Length: 91
Image 1 (cartoon, rainbow, N blue to C red):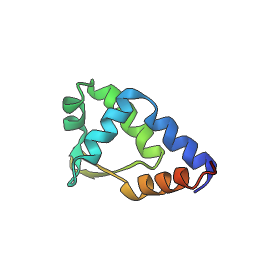
Image 2: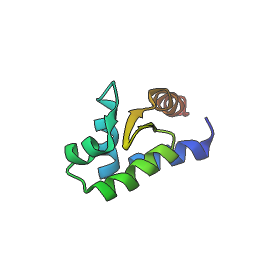
Image 3: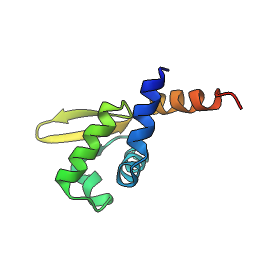
């Protein structure tokens, strides 16, 4: 994993609301709609959309559109890669 990719992922998760949004997505194995993300995290839909975009650009979530609904799923492989990278850092 490239260092800049690690920085992007850690930066995305460093913001408290984004971390809460990511955890909500990660706890929904079948995905979660952007509307449900906003409701579960008590975030305004337009603000949730910005946070979701940042998480998607960092490679932490993926989205799929069906009609007017967008469903988000956590990219757990990306999270595992990030974890592996951090564990491999020298002491």
